[in-house]
Image (cartoon, rainbow, N blue to C red; front, side, top):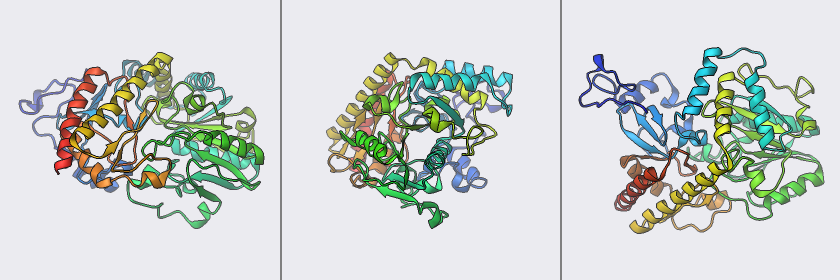
Length: 445
């Protein structure tokens, strides 16, 4: 447990607390202002900024279980969980022990290691479609590599993506919106030349497109977790599989969020549809930077050094990240997912009850362990046009009211809410009380 000092009584010079936040140290605002003088916008990922909700971010000094603690010593029940990368709870003993042991052996070698081998084997054992696995450093690298691999394997150029899905900061995949750019109110991004998206076709989510022989790949979030959590309608994923088979295109499931979040086999196990390639990130790194592509042997061995599709990375398969990821996967047994689904169901229900009790128009859909948030009177959400009907101003009011009550949500109306092993029943009870007060505040604001 983190020993946090009392900022009202702390004498910094003699403080023995693990996390000293007392006299003489800066406030959240002071830390953020200082960061902004060195880092563009004060953040290293644009979605961490409070641009869409207003105000300034809290600055995290440490975390444990279900809570993060800011530099002023305030504790928040954390529904961000590093945007889904943390599933066991912050600073889980199994992960911290694995990281410590790995770091003691050295931090990077530029050579193969046993830890990367073991994590690849663990993924292959749990996700049968991943006959081979290649590591990289982020989900963005994973989706970029998967698209390059599909193009190299098929000899084709065109890629089909879905409006509202988000596949990271890859030029060719930034044309579809999703939380990464929707949070900032952008249709896409400057700096991407027309040629970079010239072979990218954007189509509506939950509608099976008609493909032709020019299509190299279809890449899809099997559960769209970047537009507030949208479930695939019956027949959608099956239809994509059949259409890709018909024209010889590669079907890529972007499971950077859903992989090892929805279950050991991810969304593909949940819905019984097998992709050709799968991209991973987040959970497989235990909270450290990582990405991976897995898939059929024949496609994967088109990667260098066996094939003509180049991939390399100085830190790919980093021994500390792979140690943390393996430790996380070793904890994640089927009964853990049963419990996580129960907690996610409780979260959805308590938020719905809090808002309904206050007369705040909202609904919180759930897909397995994933929970979304939509504000306003909109009906069922099946695509990005539906998702965009959410009331962003109302979300901002609810967000700040929850923050004032000690609950941290993502500062954007199109992100998922995440629970983990740290969110036990006592935490959820506290969260329910806070949500009822916050909903009443948001309505009156």
